[in-house]
Length: 337
Ligand SMILES: Nc1nc2c(ncn2[C@@H]2O[C@H](COP(=O)(O)OP(=O)(O)OP(=O)(O)O)[C@@H](O)[C@H]2O)c(=O)[nH]1
Ligand SMILES: [Mg+2]
Image (cartoon, rainbow, N blue to C red; front, side, top):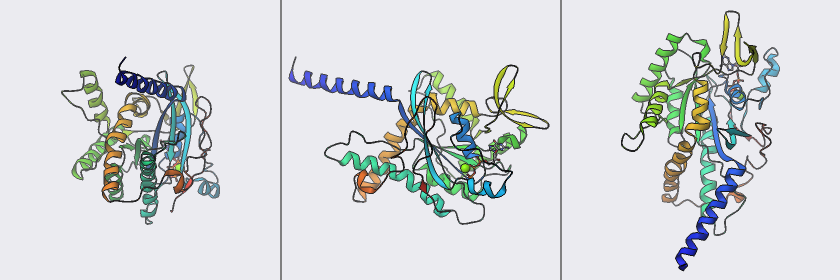
């Protein structure tokens, strides 16, 4: 075997070992949740992770409820298995924006958090000797919660999504969609899409490449694009209906089911996020959004500090635990409100 051949073999073996280790540990994947206060973000995290990652808030006690609303950027890690693939999922809950106060501070902290993860990767790339324990905590997708006002996007939503969309894959969702009738929801979705087009908000809109993609992918992406913004319903309650467990919200006039696609888009969103589009969202983050950030950063000639010199990472004490068992929200990053 030639020298070049043996070098190639060693490289291939190293890649295979690296992949095997990654599959064993689980694919790392990070989702961030952003939006106004009280829209059901923490409830959604619990619904998505199928466990009470964040304690259920006791709204019967106003004082306690006020204390329990999310006040920090809080990453939690959950080990999951989707379609036979192990996932080391991190979901980052963030404090809700207020209605009347200046939200710039809270927003800046969210943006800084996203960029800090890029800085850490960039610093790691620049090291002569790599840190084998380095954790890549880049945010791969951000769900932006739109309040179900029935009108159209608020100025704040337009501004925030525009800025966040240049740094991460933003997917807009209509929060608490059970508060609207089906026809109200359809016309609201239409108006939101008109605003997104008018203000050129860079969301992830399931792009297709007619020449490269196969028919199945094109059809799936077209279907998902038509659902945007995804309507969601969150609930931590389960009832037994016709012998099966159903996650739902119960009202005197009926029951809305979280996983019923006639009631909302939660199940399609979940499958897209955790299965069908996971690799695509990771790839766009690395190949495009991070590359763009890296170019901007390096062309400004800013100094790159290795991750461990910057200070404690909010992730440093977030541990992965057992199957679908979340770790406690660890070392959250304080956010100005
Ligand atoms: N109708 C309806 N209510 C919901 C839904 N999801 C959550 N809620 C309720 O909305 C309230 C606020 O939920 P949270 O999950 O604490 O909202 P949040 O966005 O995390 O709030 P902040 O942490 O203050 O930003 C609670 O009473 C939830 O039970 C939903 O899909 N529909
Ligand atoms: Mg919350």
